[in-house]
Image (cartoon, rainbow over the protein chains, first blue to last red):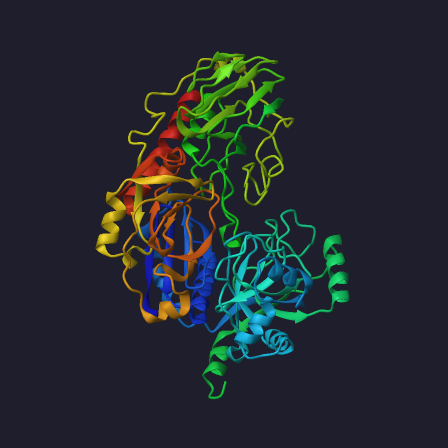
Length: 276
Length: 336
């Protein structure tokens, strides 16, 4: 459901949330990111931090300088401008993936499940080659960074390239760092080794989280990506994977970010076209 | 310098934590009971510990000690203060008073037993513990292995550098002003603001949540504290949520999880998020613990019971504001 008017909800005494809807719809995220942009430009008194998620913007505020009520009143006049954002600032970056990699295969053996990429192929009536082809044929939009440091949820921008699979019935207690996985509407990474339930597609040749950044492309907190970034996954051979991973470890890898403006109106128009 | 002879169950370096990185998945960490650490810092003339997620600088770093504290040898004179949980502290084998500044001489050994009251004790030391800043804070983020000493709990053989401090002898015997309560009045009553997904629970579900005595599960840490009690009744969800969020009765499309948020996966075993919270997730949150009571719930030992009381968000903000103002006032008075 997309709400006619966003709903303001207090999350205790330190946060106010502006919720645009309750469904998994990219349109909601465009509004979230647009409100984030607007609030960053406005510099409203007492706002400490903005936390975008798929369908709501969380706002941490300073209780000595503002209140839920005052913040709500300050945000309300901005809402008409974020309802149908024409364009959003969005960085674009390509991420190299070794699809159908040996680490993911080993995890499937260890947890006694079907090799995940085989399972994904079966769920979508595709061959493994077609899974890779499809997964690398569209940009993905990061709707939210979170859960653990550097983890994100990304959604396919071209709906015809959507592939999906259900999560593990019983989550794994371990996933190797940099594995890339999908479930439901989302593709997401495991930036550090952690438990998880998404189906493993492959392994990224690059870091998404460097607690002590070695590479110039990382900000101070070591988290490479943010909500509103666009990604294009691309397939690399084992040899290319090794070469890239070596330069990542040396701190010399160039992630190749492109600062762009994403034309939301144009994107939504293409979606509406028959046959799209 | 302090030499760690025994690490204790889980002793970590903490200050007010590192706000500002929630949108990157990095929780604030810092003292689970900021108020207790703040009292200790007050007593030894340190910078105050601010409430979690505050814009204020994080204050001097001290130790957070879980259930059984460490054994520490001081190689220099120091002024210390012990607050929070009572772990029967001794200095060279003799009991040390809590809630007052105590002078420790070089060579003396500070030791702790198992908690008698509370779950987390705090040791503040004049000048603070000096470890490198990570994102402007010295707080240990255990699950992320960052901050503090190598991002981990202390162990035997560790050595802690102390920050500079003057006039140690003048501090000895200093007590707290009577306006500052050292321990909460109702330690087992946790105040909450209902929401953001309270509407997904039936009136009976909300009533149960607020009426029963919950038990703190041993499966609890700084990330989340799990509660044992009855199942909470949820409404049936609309079809689009079943489609988009999953089949569980409390599944929602992911949103922001605040520090103190109370997630109820499947309507059972609520989890209260601590200062190392996951920042996003997909289960209904019935309520949020007010920031002033995050310390209170952090002082409950596994197996102890607690009850929730709902208050308005504006009142919760008032409580937080008053608590912080009282600490700042006391700091000013004690300095003059």
